[in-house]
Amino acid sequence: MSAFTGAASETASVPGAGADLLAALLDGMDAALCALDADGTITHWNREAERILGWSAAEAVGRRGFGGWAARGADAEETLGRLMGAMKGPGRQVHELALLRKDGGRVLVRSQAAGVRGADGSPAGVYCAFSEVHVQLDLERSVALSEALFEDASWGVVLVDADLRPAVVNGHAARAFGTGRTALLGRPLGDVVVHGAEELEGALQHVLAEGTPPAPAEVWVTLRTSEGERRRCWRSGFLRLSSPMAEEPVPLGVAWLFQDVTEERLAVREADRLRFRWSQLHRAGAAAAECEDPEEAVTVLLDFALAGFADHALVDRVVGDRRLSRALATPPGAPGPSSPVVGGGIPLRYGPRHPALQAWDRSGAVRASAGRTAEVWAEAHQWPGDAAHALCVVLRTRGRTLGVLTFLRASCRPGFEREDVMYAETVASRVAAELGAGVPSEG
Image (cartoon, rainbow, N blue to C red):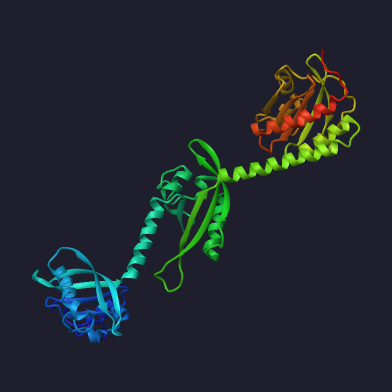
């Protein structure tokens, strides 16, 4: 008995359990399927073919070709000829065919036809799987989109499985992580993310449990790379992936798409910081103008300048050749307003390489940071015990050096950068102007 004897579905004429199994398999397919014997007579017609065209298996099986029912007369022979041509050619042949629905409407389908041979090797017929062109195009677009995302996308794409481990990584994401595409697969995110892995995994777990969030989120991460640690900000979107094959949604994992917005965020942060600092200076100048005593005016200036900039401020006045004496200081134990030092006037025992003396010699700014022994470093420099970073700026006005202004930060804060020097020098010029009021110029 040939492969095309009998009809599929409810019209199948092949007796026994084999026919029932064949009918069940054909009717369970997502694609429309029909088969023709060597003479072009339809032998199989499944439920999806009936859904698309409206013709039942009972109406289709036994007809020769599609003329007079599923194709216009002018198209019928060409349609049949193109399908039967697959019986002689190798592999599958793809065609676009114009067919007729039972209600008279036309539908354009894309077919894949292949020949079938009998037990003796002779051509036995053709089977043809087909779907509506727009459905096929949707599928092809989905596949093309998937391939483009994982090959050419200008943002990172990572598919994470239900165990929160990367299953697929595109090239952009691999470069962002500083690894190869396969190096991340199956590994916990914590292997490459030093800080921020907990936040990422928490977001992924939330998406698996609750679904796709309504808006992107920005996540700061620190990456472990061959060149050291790098801190980056990623604007991330998350999509929960569910299997289209299951009756109930079954999470397959999460699609994580991200872009690196570090430079943008740092620029915004720097702009906000500068705006705040210069606003503080404006307010400080207005408040200091109401002070009759120069030291009180300096105190006001430093209190405004310290906000968000440093933890301590010290003013050392010149009392002799390369000798400085502490004039003003913030409380060493806790943040608070600066105040005159009781018993001031005694020269400080600064070593020759002390940053304050270096700033004096250079008539500029000097930055310094402690090593591992921050407390020993601070004590050696006669600074508060929590000091770990210093910025010393010379106080000059009307051609004279009046002393050195030192800003200090604790170890929990980053060291001073070049951008901080300009702000510190601006504060120092205002402090020097207040301290130098009434002091005659040299020469």
